[in-house]
Amino acid sequence: MKKILVAFDGLNYSTSLTDYAIELSKGSDSLVVGIFLYDLRYTNLIYTYAYEIPATLAYSVEKIEHDDEKKIHACIKTFTAACENAGVNHKVHLDSGVPLIELLKESAFADMILIDARTSFFDFSEETPSTFLKDLLSEANCPVMIVPKESEEIKNIVISYDGTESSVYAMKMFSYLFPEWTEKNTTIVSVNKTTSNHLPQSRNVKDLADKHFRNLEFEVLNGEASDELPKFLKKKKNNSMVVMGAYGRSALSRMFHASMSNKVIRDLKMPVFITHQ
Image (cartoon, rainbow, N blue to C red; front, side, top):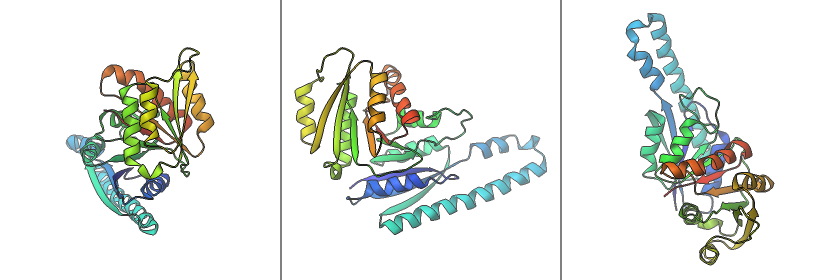
């Protein structure tokens, strides 16, 4: 049993996001909560300077708000119908305000956030992941799973392990949230800079992983993690998702891990489960 937040840009419905939410809820009595975020900052900015705005533009703002409301309710209707057809226990929240603040509040009362990799608010750059997603990953009060535009059935789990507490924590959180996935093919992959095949804390991590995953194998790569891990994941990307203990709260941890997770999200376009302690 778990509570999954499915975070939508209220004006841009994502079919793949709904598909993944339905798949993640299978095999468990989960509650899927559609969070439809409506960014009010544009409207507030215009109203702040209303005395400088022509009346015709003020009328246009009201029309935009009315049209936005229609779009949001259409998205909610589509999401609700998909959940009902799949027999998924679901609810809907419409959160208007600053999207990041609203979603962080919701995250304190959830087991996981599911969100589209393309989600962006008030961000004029074309960077992927967006500033919004980076801030969410570093500040969320629960694990976050970022999913690509196209959905596919998840058959394989790849866990990135570097011997740190953060990577172990991510492994544990994933296993606690998805005990129904213990039979899926699971690979724990680690990268050594040398030619050694040594796995950090080998005995401890194997003892832990063996208790949570049934079809388990370990893979030790050699070289730079920033090069070798993406190459490995590229070979495994079909029907797979990756688990990473990235985006720690400390500045050093964030700098060290963020580039790797950003690269996976941007280039490989596969589901990524990320959490921090």
